Image (cartoon, rainbow, N blue to C red; front, side):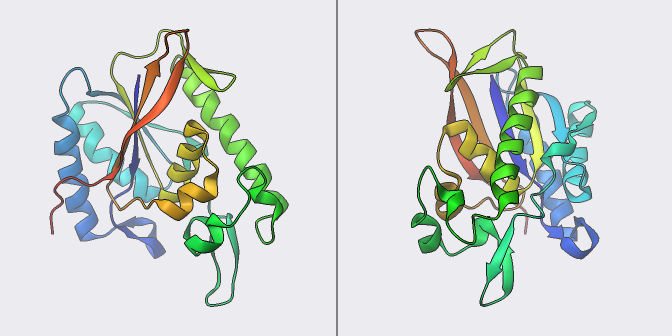
Length: 219
């Protein structure tokens, strides 16, 4: 099973919409995703309820002749902010990389200011929502791995946001979220590809085949 985590195109944040360049990116992205081929192609399009993601997803869905299905839990992590001396506060995935890498791997949410209760609870809720979503696709979590139960033959595209996608990827790959936040960035209209590889002893492991790929984007 193949999962495509797609960040929305260039946003006009105050209006929760796309810029003119963002619309060009979204159209180019749709053409690119339409050319994946039958074995890698997209059979389902899901989106965050936020307009900048919906606008991006609509281009691809129309080109592929699919409907956009809204998944409310994939909206951006808007309350995952921590205090910052320079700007007042910032999202956890934009905190200085040296600070993030210095956090404990298994207890990252126990060090101030990351010990705010809503962050730990939020990560647990995101993991539960993500696993419930995958279970509906026929990919059920089984301990540290997943078990494929009649998954779709074509890929699943989820149009969402940088913070949400990086944090979900941390859960899929069993990597502490701060290490994903510190080490990777997802540009607008980028595609992150996750393949659920079947294991010899049964089950499947999530493997990232490409992260933040923007291909050839229009100016």
